Length: 461
Ligand code: CMC
Image (cartoon, rainbow, N blue to C red):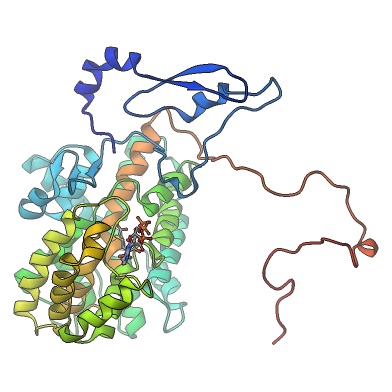
């Protein structure tokens, strides 16, 4: 996290030029000056640090990118210590209170909030592109009856690339805009169709008279001839949840979108990859784990015993802790309010009482205080989705729909960034040195012959 506006950067550029790191290489005794720009050093500046002429130069080692910035981005700012999240400078709390998902998506993609006319045009464009090709329906029919909706989403997104070959024109901003609109418009349709397939229900076509959220809920829940009319609180709550999930800077799926997109592939293929990254239980799947944990606890009285198991290191408290947020997750704060409102109008979810008690006790407990563990976005979102009637398998899909705008904003930014190239990290080779090819007959009984872990052949059935 390095926060500086463009103007601040310009103003301080003179001073920044003087900021540098003096590094002495104890292997050679040589000292190097490495420039610090915007709070960072360039990893490629380390290449000059060599033992001798044959040395390719020093590289930095950072598995899982714990302390490596891979881009400059003007989209989202996070300060994990102070619990701050802003899209294009606007605090998430203000957007959650005043904006809509479509307006926020416009902000993420274009960099500014739309005027009334721009918002109307944007909304109209999205409406116009909600339909999917009939062959995609046939493609979906081919999935097994119990296929996970997230797997269907990954597959159909990849398949969409074959329907829009013009999307490969990724250097053309007009073409990029058209595909961004198509993807934001079609995600709810793909998601709802995946759900209907899972339930064996007929697909419901998009109804463009409805709002973005209203249309999605209608495609999900409509039965028979009548339109599904959502409770305004439910519709608004889902809109706010979508705002909160729209972007989160360089998280795994966004990084995947950038990395795969850096090969200059079309955005449907890159988004299939980003969706696959989100599918994993350590990323978009944690909200599901929270609900299962609360079900396991069962009642508020059983919270202390559960916390003891957490403190003994037997289990983790799902929906708690975050790599970046170390004071609180601002999204969780907003979601807690929504969970309380939703649970007041739907049948009260007994798991909410367990969640509230769990949060209360954990926040007073020395173990969690010392490690700065607070509820994260997933602590309450799963409960809300459950109260709204979504099956657990749909939770990561509900994350993917709004994250589409964040993925595409980053994809667009990456393609316009002259510093970006095809992503290609380095490695530290740890395998054997050069050795001659060994003929098959000579391989038996060789001392020290090591196989990689796992069976050398598949077990026979
Ligand atoms: N329950 C109990 N102890 C925890 C937890 C937890 N949820 N999270 C961290 N700790 C402890 C951990 O055991 C360690 O203790 P010690 O110092 O004694 O070894 C200390 O806190 C630091 O943990 P860490 O593993 O270094 O923290 P991390 O930054 O690598 O992990 C995390 C972040 C989110 C993976 C982790 O907090 C976790 O597993 N949380 C539960 C899963 C979860 O809710 N994931 C959703 C993340 S938010 C969604 C998103 O933004 O993508």
